[in-house]
Length: 94
Image: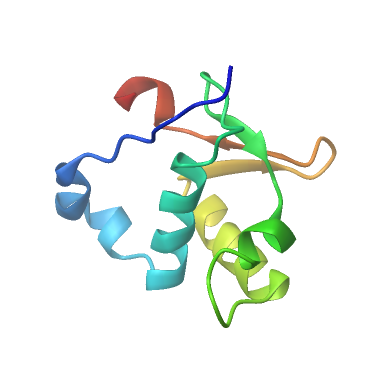
């Protein structure tokens, strides 16, 4: 069953590591949380090309950079072998 919503807590704006991210990485985090194929354990297909079509002016390369920022800041874990990303705090907050 596909998800129909993504929950974002207002407390995210008090999370210093999140507010330290650039706007593009924050945008991608919200995109990931609202993907219909996000599993109930927080795993989603790692698809920068698809995500880049969700807003004007983006390229897959830019979105991949945002994804790297999220990975480096430990908001997501990307697995290049399976082409999946895991949103780390998803289960705790959903």
